[in-house]
Image 1 (cartoon, rainbow, N blue to C red):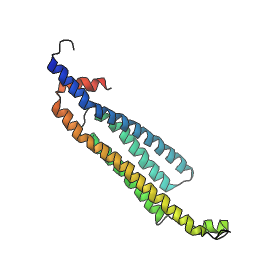
Image 2: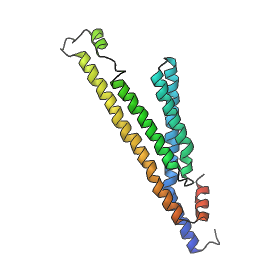
Image 3: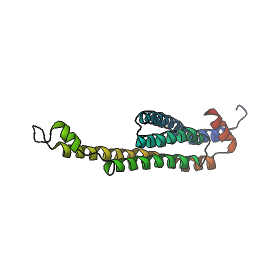
Length: 187
């Protein structure tokens, strides 16, 4: 690097600056993918004890999403233009699975509050309709899960998609030799 001129130093500096958000996104995606894979594997293991087929399905989707993100996220370091789309699609698949699960729990698989009401003896001493309260709580929980998933998984999908423009800028504004050096330093 001692024989580099000021122009080359500047090109290398720009390459490093434009590459930094891609490296951060790759690191985040890898950690996020590992977390999802571990959570999915745990869900699969616990659901297999039941067996809970819905839990097994959700666990499989979460595990697959995690593995995809864990494997694809490092491609962001190398400015792979297809990586953001794959990562975003993976997040959207997980979001769809969560929404379908919640909708099933709110409709066809919904447990009635009547069983709980029978166990506690109807309305109880305070005059509270236990069945209605249980159904309201179920509605609140699953609507909240859907809202959080929409915000989080949707936000992650948008986050990954926004890396496409960064990749394009990085590739357009930096020479290949500078990209190779910067990417080699981020391994």
